[in-house]
Length: 434
Image (spheres, rainbow, N blue to C red):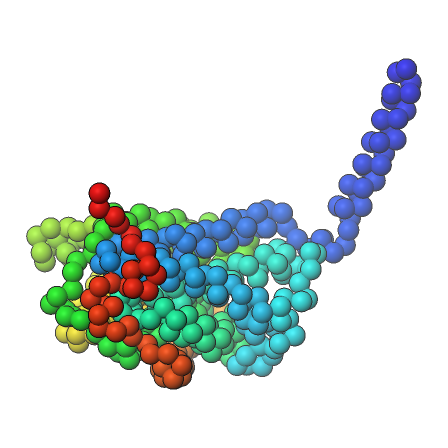
């Protein structure tokens, strides 16, 4: 009996061993690193977590209670729409071989991605998904500029076109081997691709759409600082995937990016808090979490190139200059960028993009610049990249808004704005009294 048992099991063990050896030695998987893959799987989930539910809750708490469902609906529906656009054509145009300005159409519907296709040390399917989450959060940031007054249908049309005409080309320029890449532009995790584009477009949209009724005197304060703080905390956690994940591997670069990201967020939060405390006599929850976002946006383009001193400097300057920008744009210019998208994300992202030229040097414990570059020459490259991105984004954002307005009016009618978008646009309320 024992003889037959061991003989039969020996055959089974032999078959299993042969299969395992075949899988291990299969050449198509040779370049894929399990550790890197595990980290980017985690990072991908973290970046999506930033939008759903992080950014959605952050913005929802800042608006009037009669518009909270509208804000949440915008984020959720946009995530779905952008995902499909990315699969059909966005990923191909951003990352397929093309020219200096746009990629090709050879990978529409991701038709060239199969199970064993590598992208560096991770599967290309994972790389494409990781980049999809960036494509989702970028237009989602813009929602904060036009909450409480844009038509739901107009939002969907506008941002669907914006992804293809603005976000995809700029992504190709920087990360897909396009023109800004050829210049040697430094943008580790999206100061140009994400924050400069979203911030600039937010400002153009706010100007084109016009102010909310009663702005600025009759605008109610944020209805739920609690929701905003919860959303901000999710953003902070998710941003580790955003920045450290952009190393595309589980390595020392990812570790340093995570560290400086955290330092910048903490520093900017305190800077914003103390400015408000000194100015108004009380530190506010909304203020400290807004400072956190400013610090995160500012460090994003530099996070993979700098050391701890750079994180502290960017956090301090991000908190200070973004606060000044909010005060100037909302207070002095009277522009109703409702949730300060340009002042926080645009100014912060551009600031970090420019300062990385200096903070990446060994003077500030950075990783160093490309061979032959000085801080000044790199700064000029960064400045040119920012100018090109801002001009492109401004022109095409305005054009897309005008094209959208030919199909559907951009703003809700006055009565809908008074009653709130939740009931009139979606037939639901965020809160019900007993």
